[in-house]
Image 1 (cartoon, rainbow, N blue to C red):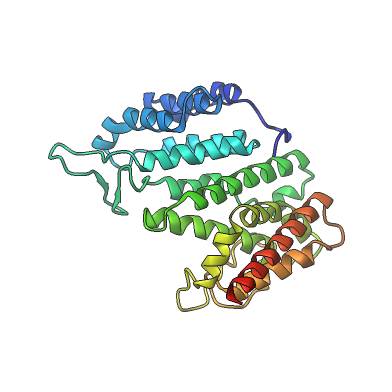
Image 2 (cartoon, one colour):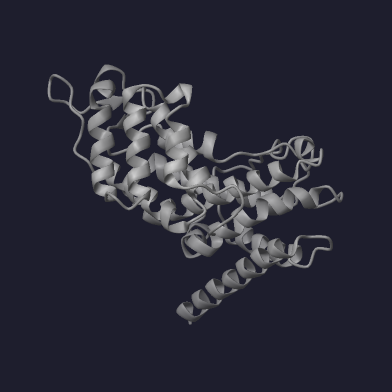
Length: 313
């Protein structure tokens, strides 16, 4: 994941980001400079977390909801600086360090809690998971890609891939007994990627382009966090007691679902995902690099299953 088209240095990103109209308040300016310094290896994730939290403390006390633009700046860094997996690892560590900071207290000495979701600063990293799902994970409309916009397609693929790698690394770091909100969101994002890449039909032919965009990010969830995801499947996590489908994914192109089992994670769904990776890896007309992602994901899923079988025996 290095040197992909459109990548930029931390300094280049910061210079552009500091000029964005939505990030002109002092706190966002501090956050941007701090993220850039972290990715230049000039400060540690712990120092970056403390610097950002200190900058935002007065604003949080005034309005516990007013952190949205902090997270949009972080998501922008994930998009543009995530071509090096080490950068994403540092950003994950920074967010986890933020979650371990002392509580922000009001004038009475009580922890400040975001009322809407009962999220505590900074333990629950309020609004981050939702912002990440809304701004870092972008689901493009295929009709926009049908106009021969190859550069836009490449850029979309790169941003999705960077975001999925961050999400998978973040999922590995999350404590199931910690912020339940973030843990649920991370699992949902993984399922959404599998749905887009594996659970929608690859016919007619134009669906191959959608597969080429969504399959590499889905594969990265497996390649990074596959053992965790298998565990969620074993536990039937996120099952809500009824079939719940997201037929809107992919817009008007590809709303036909190919998995008809129950919602949430399950062994049936895991097996279906592996089978689909195997089928897509030999799909005629598919980009060769995308085929390799599918092959690697299917092979690792088989190894995870075989290791579990050995444990049982």
